[in-house]
Image (cartoon, rainbow, N blue to C red; front, top):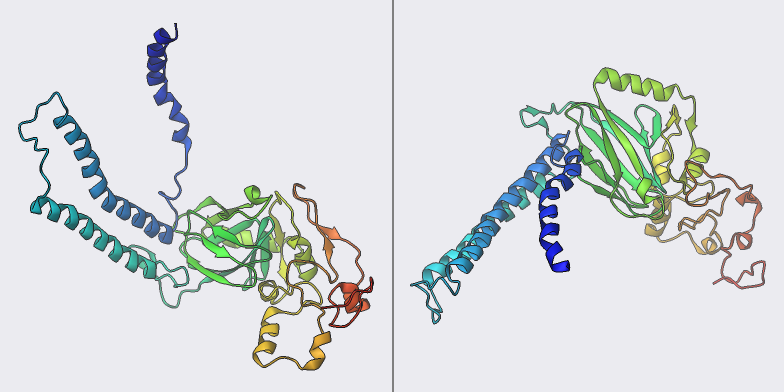
Amino acid sequence: MTARQLPITRAILRLTAPFMLLPLGACNWVVMSPAGDVAVQQRDLILISTMLMLLIIIPVMALTVFFAWKYREKAKAQDYDPDWDHSTSLELLIWSAPLLIIIALGAVTWSSTHLLDPYRPIERVDKTRKIDPAAKRLQVEVVAMDWKWMFIYPELGIATVNELAAPVDQPIEFKITSSSIMNSFFVPALAGQIYAMPGMQTTLHAIANRPGTFDGFSANYSGAGFSHMRFKFHAMDQAGFAQWVAKVKASGTTLDRAAYVKLEQPSEKVPPMYFGGVEPRLFHAALNMCAQPGKKCMDAVMMTDMRGGAGKESARDTQGLRHDGTIDVGGYAPVEPGMKGEIAQPAGMTPAAKRTPAAQGNQAPGQKDADGHHGH
């Protein structure tokens, strides 16, 4: 009974297989059809590398089938020689073709690595237009949070959460960092991905060549809310971008350190947020992990270390030196993971200035904490 059903099952599969591929027709291959010149060059690099590799893969696959068919047992091939062991001509062909392809791939990779370096300012609008050296670049400061993206436009004095916009054909310079753990900033239609790391700044140069709305997301797993760590990138003409900036400024809210610390706490599925004003040097504080009141900036700590330290009295000056993500100074209580669109609210903690180092859990060596334990 089962043996008779097998041919029918195979026939059904053959008939339905094309229909199973229909859902793929709705897929958006944005990497193969990008909207920015940098992403276009990266797309071309993928195609060139693939074609070079196929120069070996296709002949090898074809010859495998050909030899299996020609020298099958029933064929009785006249030139079959089981004792053959060497051919200089074949050896030259077998080794020279892959070697030439590897050389070509190496040359393409070396040149592309330098030309498409994310830290290198882009030099053209597209393949037919060069960028005027005096052209203004749009500055965007990016902070990866748990689990949302913050964008600060320092020259425009505005900021957004989970929404990014830029004019078409204007170079963009992204300065990227993270507030907690490593993430990866990626807008496939615009340029390749680049990592966002706490206490460090990475740079990405890009440009959009056509209007549209494109997806951006984190390409590096970063915890429970990773799947929803997405945003929209709007490429607009100059008039549309000016209207968007006006809409953000009309929000009437200001992104200061208190608002930043609230946003810094874990929250998922946060809708786009607009801030019509931004506290000066907020990105510097985020980069140096000192946005929370009382925290010492990492660049200041490193400068002190470079100069040989701050003297013996600094042994007891440990307030604000915790940069492990723990909020111990005027902080905010985090929201439980999974809370949709909710931002952390103040926890009513005692201000740091009214607490001793022992009460903060960072007592100096020899000092006892509230439980009578000595500091180390």
